[in-house]
Length: 141
Image (tube, rainbow, N blue to C red; front, side):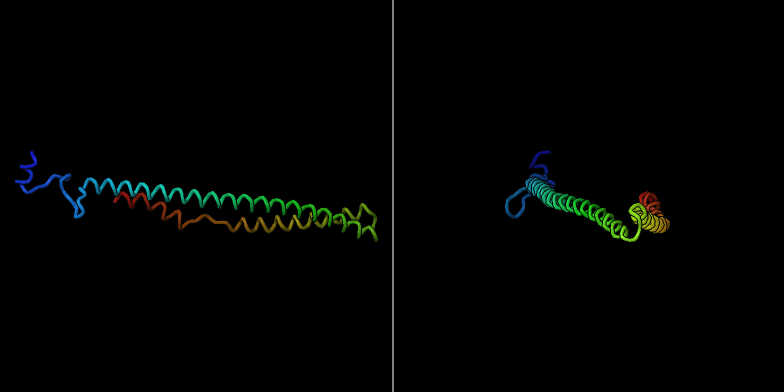
């Protein structure tokens, strides 16, 4: 079909459709595609920059927590020795250290029992599972 035939029949070829500023529909689609691609690339770069900063800050924060935890462990050891030496004023040295060890054992048992009771409270997300099972049937309808 020639250009004249299409004009005579009242239909215009897609490439011939012009916008008000002189660009063809094909050019507008190409421009929109290019702009969308640039927008997606810019958003990805922004996300990379934000995540990079967040990952660096998170890594440094985690490292600082590890250092603080190590220091707290050292303090706990030194305080335990100090407590045992204070108890040594009234009891033999070996009894003092066993008493301190017993205190820590008691604390560990309490922590384990609390942890077990909290773990027993964990339940499966039944509502989420039920709605997730409904998703495939929604696509079939």
